[in-house]
Length: 260
Image (cartoon, rainbow, N blue to C red; front, top):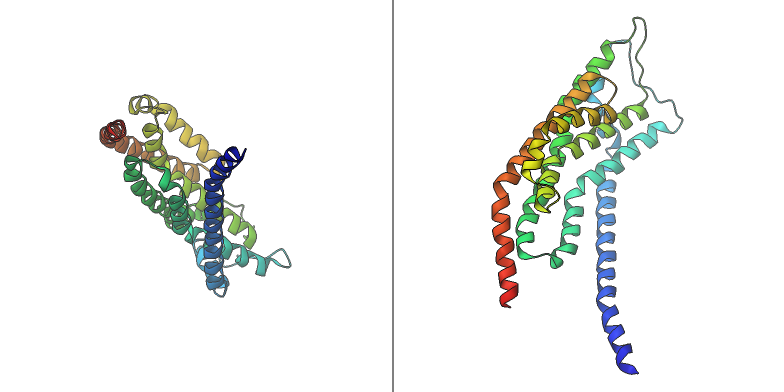
């Protein structure tokens, strides 16, 4: 009667160990975000001014930013600091996720997971930088120049923050397309040949996505759609170049397991 109980306890022990490790890593992630937030909060107002510089630098002489809510002058920089703390914690967050799942991966999976992890982080930040230095100046220049004559531009600081964060998120995710394309081929969901044959549909789909995630103007949509399509082509290129080494490593792992 005691043997089944002992076996059940032995089976539950690894599960409890994994849950405790997951809890500890989640606590580390929350703590890292909190520490970065506390370090940045003193500079929250300055950070907001830096963030909206692409707009404030082109506002007309009679235009200005306003706060329509009573608590907006405090809450908007507060919100920005939280989001910025999360963005800056992304490498540490992904490292914790990687440390949690790495023991369950094969050797050939670990070989390619680390470069993919580093590339995804760099591409995400590259998308944000592209949005800040290229997209936002063009979009704000367009919006401030097409208004009716005699209308004074006075954008709300909360709406500005939401617009900029939406653009950051859209371009940060869009720049992950090479990683997504590579993983789709790696996991067998599709092939390079199938993706190459669907280029016209992907090109059209990029503009459809740009229509939904950017402001309703052709400039913003094109600025997002064209890089998305180019990044898709980059993903196909890398999938074509690295597919054979992956298959070789997989076969080596299978041979080692069969020998063992």
